[in-house]
Amino acid sequence: MTQPPDDFNPIAGIPETLEPGLRRVLAPNPSPMTYRGTNTYLLGTRGLAVIDPGPQDPAHLDAILGAVAPGQNITHIVVSHAHLDHSPLARPLSQHTGAPILAFGAAYAGRSAVMERLAADGLAGGGEGIDETFEPDHAVSDGDTIEGDGWALEVIHTPGHIGNHIALGWQDRCFTADHVMGWASSLVSPPDGDLTDFMLSCHRLAERDWRVFYPGHGAPVTDPSGRLDWLVSHRKGREAAILAALGSGPATARDLAERIYTDVQPALLPAAERNVFAHLVDLAGRSMISPLGRLSSQARFRLASA
Image (cartoon, rainbow, N blue to C red; front, side, top):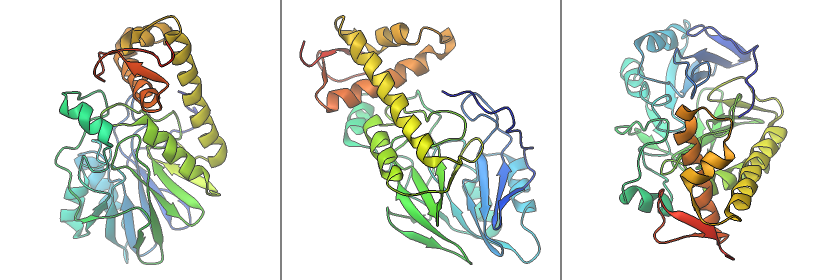
């Protein structure tokens, strides 16, 4: 995690113009997982797209509706992924406006096969909270274009943080939601998150020449390429630390988290453990390590050459 910028202090509920045709309304849900809160974006000048309505909060619903000026109306509601800080307000907003909800799919759409197996074996929790009942009116696919009044969004499926996560390309800008954030590295917590998918999604975004990323939390990212490089190198560094620790012998995710995250408060150790497990699943999938027995969050792992 990087140090959050002290100068990012928008006022919740007050629309801010980021550039012509784009405004941000911050949701009033600050937390250690959401930083100042969830960024809700309003795209367009007449027919508007609302990107990530946010958590179930009447005040935030009023703020979004209040941001619609005379001569404007909300025509599309686009949800990047089904976590509780991004999607629950979509249905109330749709009921108020008549606008359809678009997303990659329901809460567990796009989940990888290995994460499906872990979930079936009972692994749960550890993430940001799934919006279990989320269901879009229209499911979009990778490569689709969502067109509105003077704007168009390219759907880019970016699983990793969660299986149904999408980014949205807007010419040379990209709404990256929780895949690339403006204040910290993205949480990848099985079975919601899959690190193998996350890294592939990073490389896919890096293939494009973006001018700016508009994230789900934090300030706009004005050096998209540099930020993606940092995310990849951050994960590679954690991978190297795990492999080095396994050089001393087999260990569980908990063992490794306690050895590697020496400066983490005890209350945050379970999240660190889940992060380590995400790396272990990825490394096992690449045949660099192997579990002693069935793959699980409690398994002991060893180097493949050991």
